[in-house]
Length: 231
Ligand code: OAD
Image (cartoon, rainbow, N blue to C red; front, side, top):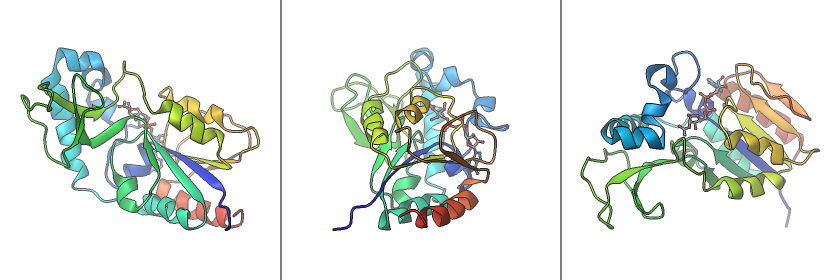
């Protein structure tokens, strides 16, 4: 049996921008409209959980109204020729809906809710709101299944182990501002070629890096061509 090269794609908000989901740090991004510590930190949740709940209820509703774009789809199609793992900081489900089969969500998933007491007690909520007073089966308030600032990132070790094994590393639509996710790049082998797709400059000075300075949909077309010569 032919063995496929391993591609690991680190994705961020930029890959979903052309689907209509606002990024965080671009001009007009979400963190211009909201204080990140109010709505996306464990302290914010302790101070004003209803505000946080509303913020994620809005994000979840919006997710039900958008579709994956061709960048998500091309990444999924690469599975025909490569062993692809997506390591995403995104809490949307657009990689899943585009057909990717191996996805590690570092920062949680919008379509899930969890117990405030037990991080492993997780339920699917789809695109609906989580109501204030709605309880998990252990009697605690349900909260969004999101990893907030001030919380541990349980999937980081799994992701690091995948990056170590990568033959090719893709970085798509992330400003690489948030750790520990941004630190994953450092786990790649010295010889592993890296392709970075972003229309703006990303402060990353890596080895073996090819920068494709395009939006994700255009950049992924170009990348697919480059990769097909490197199967
Ligand atoms: P950012 O908003 O920090 O960065 C988005 C990146 O996408 C930037 O580098 C943009 O230039 C780029 N971009 C914008 N439009 C694009 C397009 N059409 N195609 C490709 N790239 C585009 O988002 P992240 O790096 O994902 O965490 O942010 C990381 C984390 O910070 C998020 O997971 C979230 C946030 O706070 C939590 O809330 C816990």
